Image (tube, rainbow, N blue to C red; front, side, top):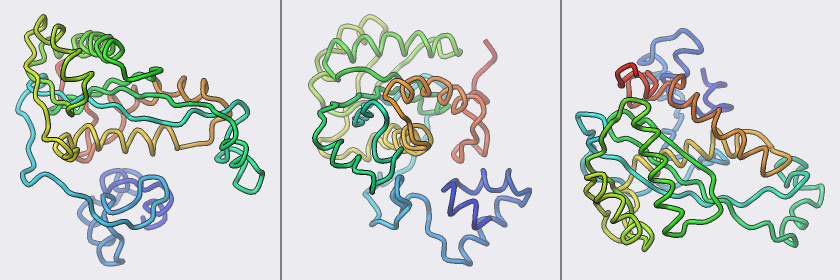
Length: 245
């Protein structure tokens, strides 16, 4: 159990499923050995970090579509042939990466508050038109999975969200909600999904090209929604909270 936690950095539900030990027993063993909670670890390196701010009150909406969270995660693109993760720090790839302007990818995501169903796309920017087009496709994706109506959309205060989504939200009867400025933890479910997306997709393995990483997103997302155990859902995947379509 300790080895799984150290190498894989997964929660107690996943460790319990892999080892056949009850989740409560896993928690007691991890606590007995002084293993810190995942929220206190850097998602990439696994090193202990200072706890970040959290919302004062944890909540979960009662039905699918009642509230969804939207956010963008900015990732450095992978140079052709792979970066330092593929070749190691001693290979000179770090200096090459610094000298080669490869730009960034923008991973747009929409997460349902009740079910944790998620939809993501890798897009070239985070401009208003790009965000609006992504939201339109995400609405279709949610509808195809049984969430026929979205009531509220929570985002940060980025210009693209505040002004470019108004027409689309009005057309679909969606009420926009904005977090307080400089308080990203208020959009915590999207932030937490971004961390999972980084550790289990973007940095899970070394990719030799940016296209390879982008192509791996859809299969991982399918696994996240239909097969991956979610600690907030009692060890069940998001699809378990949706009616069959």
